[in-house]
Image (cartoon, rainbow, N blue to C red; front, side):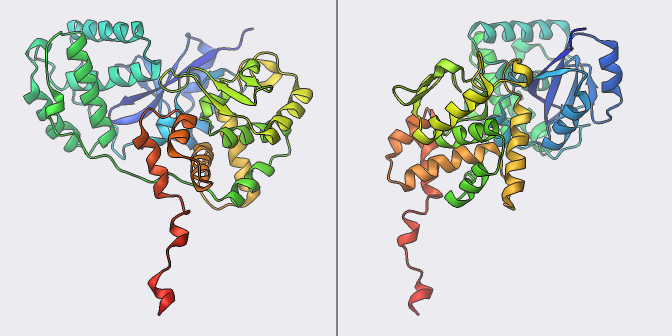
Length: 379
């Protein structure tokens, strides 16, 4: 019998960052899911969902082992790590009424428009959920009567009153702006409404000694190759798992990253040491299509399994920090900067659209800071 497949996607629901489970109805699978108390059913989303949490996600993975295959391809974990889950009661919008059919049809039209423009499913779900919450706040008001004043009212009476996150507020503004411009064909101007200031948190960076301990921790050559390639090329988790065999250009010493964030291709230098490691890995595992395949060569390697590989490597290294895979990418960029690499090249290697995004690494590099002598030392 074919193993059921569950497609996971990210959404904002009732002010929370959640993971939605979409699958073909299966009574045996439903029986397993209903036994897991953390899972809830959403009438508005018409699916089961789970508040985003690494711990709960791992519990779900363990629960479904042998019962279903979880597809994480629509999940952008880089984004999740940057958007903290609201510490907010899930009853936030229980009092909001359901949308009339006319509004649901408009939402569906908006969804189809975004799909035709090749927006990612994760972005589509986020925008639709944010817009649906906004429209449910005005259930008796036709969409064509909504104005800037309504956006301000929603901001004050719903988002601020319920202490929802700044990231959710920005998503609502973005979705409203795009919806009214493309579907309603009229100019509502949410850009005139004050957006929340974004937190400018510094990226987490490991020392070269700590990186070495982590990369040397796995005994399994496949695990070692995956972590080493992420750090040596500054890859995102999804970029590593989407690599195919022909994306490794050993003759030119390059890794070709196709259709990464923002649907952009880029190339990055391939370390000679990592190339040797990849050759040893290839001889041992003989992957056929994807560079890193799942168990028994079925599909891409699982995202949660890769996170567990990192977790185990950190534990073996006895590094007492909440290290994630994305720390390897941050460390790669910072170490390049400390080695004297120009910021413009680092921007290209990381695939950043704006130089301002890359400039944040100048705040965590110790290259210049080491030259500063504390006045305390001259007393």
